[in-house]
Length: 476
Image (cartoon, rainbow, N blue to C red; front, side):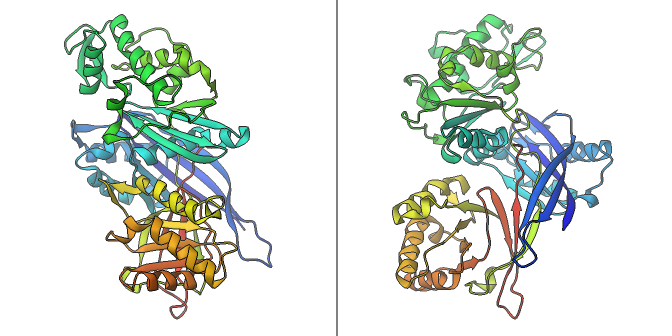
């Protein structure tokens, strides 16, 4: 089986909005005697849109209609229609995800693809998306070392750190290229945190001043320095803690970063030497990139070329491969169907002990929280080698301890397992929770971190559930 599907990806960021059309080649790579194994074997980016400034009605509101018209205009330019799209993703990132009407924008775009994977990516998840898009995860696996990606955008810098292919940390700071804006040679806007940082550093800069490169370079130098401190490439000063977004936490000081990639709108100004008009985008992104490139602290780590820079966050959406769950499963019919649920993946290494299962779930849950409360998430793992009654009880206890915040929340506890243990595990968890929590536990489904899953209503006399796994496609 060889099949092609069309995919559209829309990324609505703090500063910019862009669109990509991709052709995905999918094949069944199993033999005729085994269960089908559908994989994406090739991804061809067919069309990349212009990069637009994200249309805003006000500092707190996205112009949903203008975003929709912009996307429709790109369909026309690419000679494509929404009906041709099998799949797609709308990702709302950065400050844009915090705008008052982010959901209105999602619904305005919902009819522009066959079946969108729709997500507002909080800063932690955005750090992961960007790092994977830039190829930091792959580099860390190749080099068996610690690689960090800095996604330096308009409003924030998202940091994702990988060690040997495994995510070990994320962080987000209020440092970006459009936190100081200019027009006609004058400064028109300064983000309050940056204004405070300048004042504390003895730099006199305010709205209405002439946009002098020397003054702006001085504040951008400090911003670059703070990013180096965030990576523990130099000691952190007293001002550093206040630059994290939403009470975000810094990376551990002993994280040991060996190599760096850069993505986001400012990245190209880090990789290449700059000249000409330093304020050509009516902001300080070019100067910030230049100061990062010159900063000696960054030279302690090897600079690697990112697979993508400004387009790193996401270039498309994945194929939908409808699968059928195993027949030994547990589910609550009243909670089905459910759609677009992100996968929280426990790696096989983390499955090795109870303590690492618990810590893996607890460490990843904040990626899927909105305003401090867990959203619906699917906890996925292999389950290989855990088939005895005792093993199942131990695994049930570990899941309950790790996922307590989900259990206390309004959504069902959803578990997706590769091996055939769902019924035994689901029943064990229900007994331990005294049947006070809805549990959906399915098996026979393989996933990876970053996937989304749909679970349909029961078929086959109620014995199995149809499952669609949607993989976001990252450039690599």
